[in-house]
Length: 159
Ligand code: MN
Image (tube, rainbow, N blue to C red; front, side):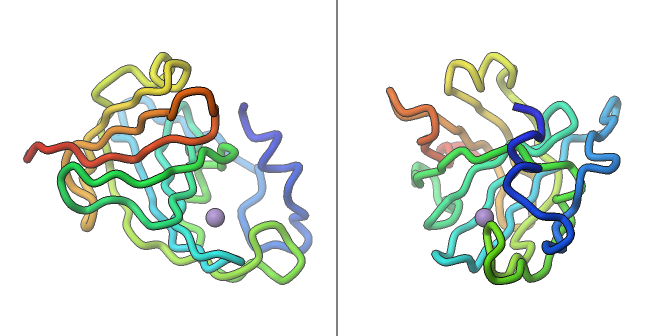
């Protein structure tokens, strides 16, 4: 998917969001990062983003990520975001894509448990979050038939 769709949706003269300069992170040997941003757009949602191959794989989670074991929340896959988006906070102006305020809700590192390239194709990812709010093992599982709709599930395990 790369970042074509991200670019196509935005006018970088109008939005304060990061452009594509240096968008790909060279992550060799560095722990993988994640961010969750609270986004007061037309409808409040949380953007759940996991670094993978230099970009942020992204899902919009209307009710926010689960915090208790076995809870599950709908997570709608959206376009990849540039790695620089990890630190973005601000106000996207009216009339622009995603207009509203963006605030970081949690961030940190995470570890992939299952191979992600395969998992994205298959619709099944497991990983361990090491954030302030999000801790422990999670899974993202695609709901059959719809390529965009996944469930974000907190596993019943402690680390
Ligand atoms: Mn959003």
